[in-house]
Amino acid sequence: MNFIRVIFLFLISIIAAFLTFGCAEPLPPEQEAIINELNQRELPAWYDRAKFGIFIHWGPYAVPAFAPIDSDINDALANHYDDFFLHMPYVEWYWNALQFEGSATRQYHVENYGEGYSYDNFGQIFKGALSEWHPEEWANLFAAAGARYVVLVTKHHDGFLMWPSDHPNPKKPNWYSDRDIVGEMADAVRDRGMKFGIYYSGGVDWAWNPRSGRTLVDFTSALPIDAEFVPYVETHLRELITRYKPAVLWNDFSYPGNQGLWEMIRDYYEAVPEGVVNDRWSVLTPLAKRFQNSWLRDIFHGLLKFLIQLGGNNLSALQSTPPPHYDFRTLEYTNMEAIMAEKAEVTRGMGLGFGYNQIEPECVKLSEKELIHSLIDIVSKNGNLLLNVGPKMNGDIQDIERKRLEQVGAWLAINGTAIYASKPWIQAEGKTTSGNDIRFTQNEETVFAIILNDLISGPVRIINIIPDSLSSVELLGYGPVTWNLDETDIIVELPEEVIMRVAYTVALHK
Image (tube, rainbow, N blue to C red; front, side, top):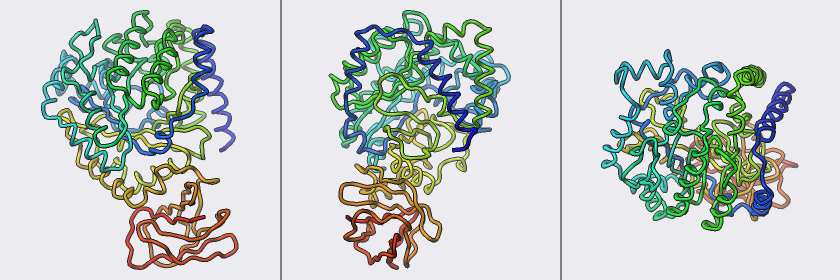
């Protein structure tokens, strides 16, 4: 890590501390006691063992299915800070970008739907297309891909509810699905042995508060701050917990207030003893109130812009200070540099964003090699991969995304022993003498050296990695292989008759 990056992360941590603590609502002693109790809780074993999950972004935004593709999310932040949200390649942010003259989204909207065409119409079109959706087909695909859990977006920032809630938005009462998408997906996922989780946008809801923003600071100042929004969010989350018992409670952006928050998390764990929550529960409402002051907003805008330029493309650094309790860290469209002490989850789409984008070319999608290598790298560093699928409005999944899921499933069918239920080894990365990268994982009996390359017959020398003891060596998907030691290197003889693409695993049994 270079000096500039160290300084950047230090400054960002100070800013984040100011955001989270300097502007935080004071916690009453009762909530502090609840948090202390929650922090004694161990991470449920299933989540650490799972390693691979599927994220689903699907809603009214799948109707226009448009977002600009001139840059990825990190480049958009670094190169277009002053109008970041107009360059985001995230389809699910369509409504926000639509508000601004000159945005690519507004231009697309006017050309295809007309100047006065309301985003509300997309909700009705989406509901009409639901008759074509078959959740069992999704669940079959995800299970075949080797996923161990599935997280469905139940409400994104547009506020559309993906279940027939008893508590619809009072400002937009028909803004929900009459078909129980959440319940049907939960049943289909669980019937195939996977865990089911939910995403909910707790801090942003344009159906409740239509204010939008070009920049991070402007967007934060536009968060809902009225007192009625907190019970609206809590009521939804409690309803989702009661009805669907999600194994993952995945909040996004922030939470509108401390009132009832930690009591709700406590009650969630009581209802779902093996449930987990992510780290996006920080309360930003006091900050939103402060940013109503244009003078403070302008100062912070300039400071944050300078820090981002200093640090380069670093979206994840803006999430560096978590709330007082969580089960895992959330990393979005970023790489893990080293083994993390805390459990992490890396989430991303197969392309530039999450929701289905009809103009996104296939060339920006992850290749088979990129996807599988990313999964391996993340697992070796104490992470899970939550890989997004963005269905079309009628529920069809793109052929390229189906193909990638089938490919990762085929690889895991052979090499899953090195992934599922594994732990990081004493080091995550290594090399062969031919220069191929290696990632290491382990369980109680075995160290797994996963070579990030096609298998080529002949000897492969793994350098500087002798485990404490070594009794035998196996090529996963083949069987025992000949091996010998040369000081600190292990030389493994690979068979000629075996073809393995993308990556192969040498199991070093203790």
